[in-house]
Image (cartoon, rainbow, N blue to C red; front, side):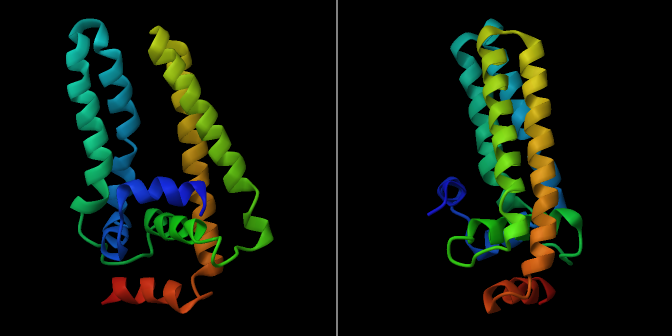
Length: 172
C-alpha cells in the first residue's frame, strides 16, 4: 500500500465521494485549507488554546470539502482530470503507471513535503518568511503534481475497465 493511499484512507473517499471531489470547485477551494490552518495556528499568539477551534475548523473543511460539491457535469475540466489522475496514482501498486510518470510525482511530493516542514517551522517560531516561502513550495509542488496527474489520467483513462467506468459514471 502506498503512502498516498494511506493518507487518502483517512478521508475515506468511496467512488461517489471521489466523483464529487472531481468537481472543479472542490479542487480549487481545497487550496484554502493550508492558509486557513496557518492563520489558525498563528492566532495562538492572541487566542491561546482557543486557536485549536479555527485549526479544527480548517481540518474539518479539508475533510468535508470533497463531499459537499455535486458530481461535475463533465470530467473535461483540468481539475477533474487531476483528481482522476490522483486516483490512478493511488492505484499504481495494482495497475502500474508508465515509467515516464513515476519520477516527477515523487519529486513534486517531496518538494511539497519540504515546503510543509518549512511552513510548520515558520508557524512554530512565528516567523512569516519561512511560513510564506514554505507555503509557496507546498503550492508549487502540489499544483505541479496535479498537472502531472492530468497527464497521467490522459495516458491511463482507458487502461482498465475500472478507469473507464469512472468516466461513464460522470456521464450518467
